[in-house]
Figure (cartoon, rainbow, N blue to C red):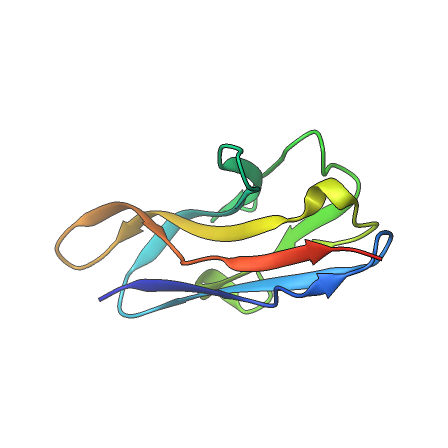
Amino acid sequence: QVQVAESGGALVQPGGFLTLSCVVSGTFRNIFRMGWYRQAPGKQRELVADMTTLGDTRYSESVKGRFTVSRPNGERTLSLHLNDVRLDDAAVYHCKAEGVRTASSVIPAIWGQGTQVTVSS
């Protein structure tokens, strides 16, 4: 069974930095795209940034120039580097694996449970 798990959420001060990690476990052949989404209280879940297997990236306008995604350990991992954190970056950050190809099928999307980022001085 393929699963997605996030880690790294913490309390960070405005202007600070933080790195979130996402790891995909289980057996699969490849993953088309992995991404980070976030959901603040009372708001819809939104895309933060994602990356395809080819390395193509997308970033939301609100995080461009501040956040960076990387795949430090190949296809199973996706890191989100948060710099110059703002109060409105506070949210639960979820990792999503899209187009997960196994031996028998393609799973459209698998979500992790999320990790909390709190921003406060």
